[in-house]
Amino acid sequence: MPASLWALHIIAFLCFWRAPSVLADNPISPGFPYGSEKVRGVNLGGWLVLEPWITPSLFDATGNANIVDEWTFGQLQSKSTATAALQNHWNTWITESDFAAIAGAGLNHVRLPIGYWAFDVSGGEPYIQGQLPYLQKAVTWAGNHGLKLIVDLHGAPGSQNGFDNSGHRVSFPEWQSNSDNVQRTDNIIKTLADMFKDQTNVVTTIAPLNEPAGFDGDDILSVVRQYWYDSYGNIRFPYGSSQQSNTLVLLHDAFQPLSYWSGFQTPPNWQGVAMDTHLYQVFSDAEVAMSLQDHINTACSKASSLSSFDLWAIVGEWTPAFTDCAKYLNGRGIGSRYDGSFSGEAAVGSCSGKTGSGSSFSSSYKTQLRQYWEAQAQSYSSGAGWIQWAWKAENADDWSYQAGLQYGWIPQNPTNYQYPNICG
Image (cartoon, rainbow, N blue to C red; front, top):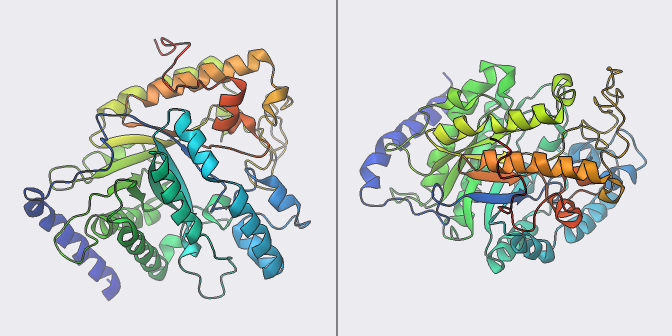
């Protein structure tokens, strides 16, 4: 075993064994009563980490079809052009008025994705920096409006999943294959933990890595498990002593069933850990072919595993959309399964009237969106709560919480159900 990895194991071991002795004197007091009050929130997607489907105009305006993620956004156009576009985007996509509207909609959390490149660009990586002042603005705005903020590391060096939302769309993730990648990520989590260790009344939670590609097997899962151990020490013990922070650690399930993580970092030896699971039903042929009732039944079926899991289980991403029709949802230049434009697959139906502006949606379609939204909101409340993806999108109102409020398929009060028995 390399010396660096051996050191990481020792750190994790020490964290494991020192935690119980400290807990008796210094129990964690999170900035939100997780477990007794439900998390209800939205993701600020597409702001500090670009996603082509959330802001297609940013990508289309480049005139270069090879710009498909934030990496190529900085790589394939001049730095001055990319920087100007990003600064305008950061200044306008999310403002304090969004935080006011989120709080006004009865929500209590925002989850804010940020990429590693906001903290660390090296080795010729083409990312444009400048996100950190906006992270600080978000903390101030959340505090001003009584919202709790989850800071989510959404992209890691080498990419942890190969998705464009990791910053770099690649055919296979490389984060786990290089110990330097993992060490850089650890260092960023230490930085975040130190930044917010005394602001846990607002920044209640740090999510140390979004969606690592556990579906690629044990080569990545073994690294992820060790990284979760290291992240626990880095987040819960940021003071350089045995003093604990009150920051919650939100681990992603790495696309494994919750049962895979049963018994992982559970009390009493571990404190202040929650599990994040993302429940979408649009990213396979079988799912987009399902009837609305099948979608509802599938969502409702999650309640038992969420309620019985041995950590606070938060559904950190989900959507009322039940097609993949949104432009660039599967990646810039890639079509939709639903209408057969994705790799020439068999069409389920037309995407017309299924995405774009909510003003074009039929009343029956808005009713369907409302029913599916309610089924998920009710089912996912069986756990510790939910955070919808996303607050807004330029041209995909079926995904937008903001648009759902405007057009009526999301209630102004998130617990005001029209279909209170939709899950039986």
